[in-house]
Amino acid sequence: MENIGSSKQSEGIRRYMLTQSEAAQLACGKWSLRVIGVAHTKGFASGTHLSLHFADHGKLLGAASEAEYLSRADVFLGAPRPAGVAECHRSKGDIVRFSHATQEYGVLSATGHIRSYYLPEAIWHHESSNAVYFCKECLKARK
Image (tube, rainbow, N blue to C red):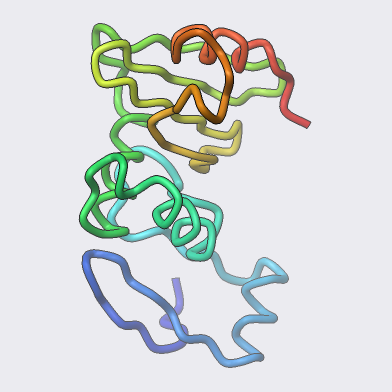
């Protein structure tokens, strides 16, 4: 990969500052960026998605930083499935995982991007348990 833009390393996440020309070339597919700090998935689709999901779910999961949240989501969704973690595949290719022990829940897109990673709460999903929520989410086809 060509050396593009300038980068800044913070908390294990490398953020790129691109010129408008570089951004246009990236958008047109001339270059691709590999997410630094994830070993099993392609990370979130963008830094904005990561920031929003961390703001919404990081505290409840006990993640102290975006980097920790990303790392945990990457391992939970992309590493080989450990015992006690249920997994299903939606009709459009998403992988959904749920840990009965920790109550962690996450969705990995068919393209390998993390859609979400969180601890479900009945106040939001209105199911009798997080396991029931997981089962119902498995039946959804992702548009």
